Length: 240
Ligand SMILES: NC(=O)c1ccc[n+]([C@@H]2O[C@H](COP(=O)([O-])OP(=O)(O)OC[C@H]3O[C@@H](n4cnc5c(N)ncnc54)[C@H](OP(=O)(O)O)[C@@H]3O)[C@@H](O)[C@H]2O)c1
Image (cartoon, rainbow, N blue to C red; front, side):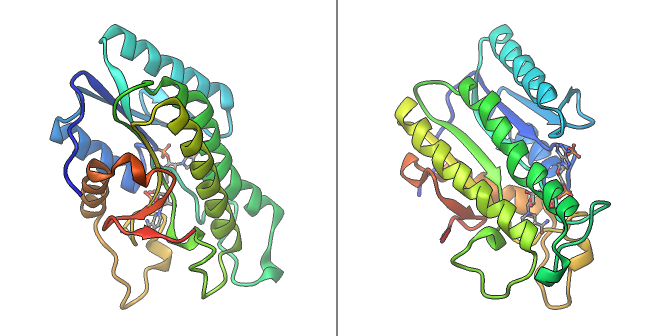
């Protein structure tokens, strides 16, 4: 794979810019200078957005569209780094006996429905020609083909559903713009609040800055032929 250059006057958006991985992606995109502007979106960002409130997602997309118009730039990178595994709504299930409606609903809102609404409001902002990338951070455990261990029903199922949304959107985006790339990403195990309770001895946990650098490197090299895939931080295509 070779490095593909980004057109000038390009704008990048990071959704989930307050998270462990999202903040590292934002910092590196800003320091690399490949995009003329990099906008941060998140629950506490200057452009606020919360997946439980579709109006906030629509308003954030309108602000991004206005920013593009003002600066005569085009949205060339949409990077969605949101996700939920554990917290107040519950913990990942070890057994089907632990399946819980509230936990499942929360996991699906943050891992699936929220990113779907981001697709609805942001993908129309991508240009209709030339290279553009929409990347949704997913997880290898969302791969049905790779599931050998079981457990984590809600997280696995909500990420598998996200992968299907990405594949479906990729097909539509290609019809609109053959230069587009729309992928799901697996970042590896990264040292963030999401993974901390599950970091076991012997498991390779990488700093967020390293994972972010790897993902941006992979995205920079992905050709349109990779669209619709689940790609890991080394650039390997994983089974769905
Ligand atoms: N860490 C790992 O080992 C690992 C492994 C595989 C996959 N992943 C995936 O990597 C991605 C990033 O996770 P992380 O490790 O950085 O976790 P994290 O630090 O816990 O970040 C969670 C993210 O989810 C966002 N979020 C939570 N609730 C939200 C809501 N109601 N509305 C909008 N956004 C909401 C947060 O956005 P704010 O900016 O608003 O806080 C934050 O960006 C996730 O998709 C995760 O599944 C992580």
